[in-house]
Length: 111
Length: 122
Image 1 (tube, rainbow over the protein chains, first blue to last red):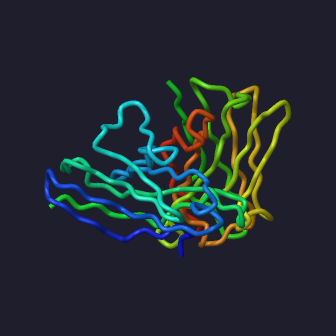
Image 2: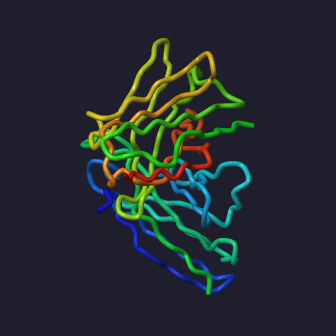
């Protein structure tokens, strides 16, 4: 059971918009600790996609964006492309555990 | 360009110590703006942060509560690398292990090693 809760799967057609939620608690996202998002393609290491809620590292398309409300965060992907098919993970810091925590991951399928 | 190269055995016997090394190129293990972490991933436990080492005028370590009694992460400044030692392993420690960088520009894990699949089995 992961500290941060994500839906196991989402799907969308090419060109559509999808969102992935990440629900935390008062000891992590609700405590205003940063939320980051990672993309993991099959057989590869996770890659930083979004940091500080809604900032993109160099090279990440602006089709990817993040937001936060209360103890939850969301990742939005617009203009879905087949290469977006991957697992997505949220991550934050948890003060009760004194460590960094991840969501259980969401598998995105592009129909 | 920063690159992390992992090395170490893929098979460890139960009760023994798992040892992995992460060689850094393009940055320094003694950097004042980075921390060096180990994270593992398994189907049962997902992504799990294990611990970190970093230098801020002196060396610091931080470990996850779940492995605190069994883990050591050590820097090696002469080789610009850092290592993971996890003792008394059980089959539940079977996972893909990643070394990562956490840089002050992001406060996120911005660079990852290639991953090492470690199986705990006799």
